[in-house]
Image (cartoon, rainbow over all chains, first blue to last red; front, top):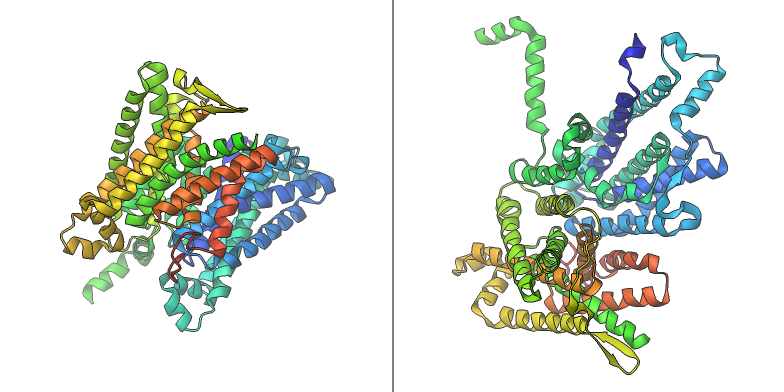
Length: 326
Length: 294
């Protein structure tokens, strides 16, 4: 039964969606403290190459490689984030864009290690490694009525889903905490936030670094899901992709980034015939969104409206009637 | 050898400078980084290829056509992507940046579809004319490029400082509201600025096509990013700074290619961006104000 529903192609798309959601959250987190970073593609590349090289050359377990990839990206995030504090708005966007391009040029030219623009192939695949461990315990996918191939992709999706749920839960919690409020205050007005006693330096670097870590983490996952990476994967277009996730979905809420990443990954797959025009449509979407709905599809008022609807439904007809008589 | 490299560097630098002039004009008046400028430049180059190679018409027609098309593009950019955002409540200051990124992706992929991904040669007999001075070869195109860029800069400086329209432009750049109170038609001034900047981009596009004999849809992106590097180097909104920054970057890049590792040529601009922004956000030629870079 399960074997019929699960199509490896669909599972692959779901895993892309899940990785893109992490990327969407990575730019949402930096935006939530009012910083626009266009360098997330660069951080993603750092994470991907770190993890891929460590697992290929030193036979490190994948999960260790992914964590190290995220850590290295985070270290770069701190290194860029601290001096970038002097910049804001457009200047920060340009500096981070420059950073991303420098990273890409280094990947292309450092041929002895990164194999230049040919890219790295033969990266251990996350699903296959997981499958090996499962096989050792004597588990056979046939018991679920699945083929090996399906089971491998299913394992990837389930792992990514677990990671996503943990991340989303963490960042929703963080938004409701002191840290989240500090980010929001800095976004609204930096000087006012500073006069309220918020340590701007600390929180801005924190949000920038969190974004870098997430992007590096997503990059490392990407490397082990694709099993092949090249510098072109982390170029300017990737930075724009990531930006679109958040801008289209809504940059005020974490749900905006999640929705944007999901929608923007499905759209070109669902409409195969327009996939050639994908970037043209992206361009039009960016222009139209800025002109008509600069806050993105999902914003606070839409979420509140949705919550109200949900409450009414849950309250049932009785709830509505009592309200009427009051 | 060195002299030849310097000439190449100046040629490249003059083109960079024209691209940067377009950036700096828009930034000076609107405070906006026009990310679509590189793609407008690329369209200008394609128009040049189309007119000279495909239709076989003379070069001056190509120039006129490129200026015309890019000016129209500039007008559309202003009407579609920039004007709707101006003066609107609750629009983040990053909105125009993102909107112009949208225009740039649209234009890049549009030309990708129309012209294909490959390189287009810029076939023109004019590009082959060369002189032998001692042991150095100078192409007529190189002299032309240098002359055009110097002329453009002189005319632009004169126009900005002496004519009424130029003064209106500078007044708008200083303060939009005050300028409009004093009777400057700021809407028209802004439109003029964007059109002028785009036309400059178009001219630079044709010059690049002639100098390097290759035009492709991706050239806009790298040129746009380099233009950004130059205006940051020269100080945002500073016309003379853009010229000097352009020449500096052109010379540095040529020297790196000649005597260093050519693979890192494209990285120079971006490393420059990062260091200048971090060490001297107002640019090398910029005024020293506390607000610069903020």
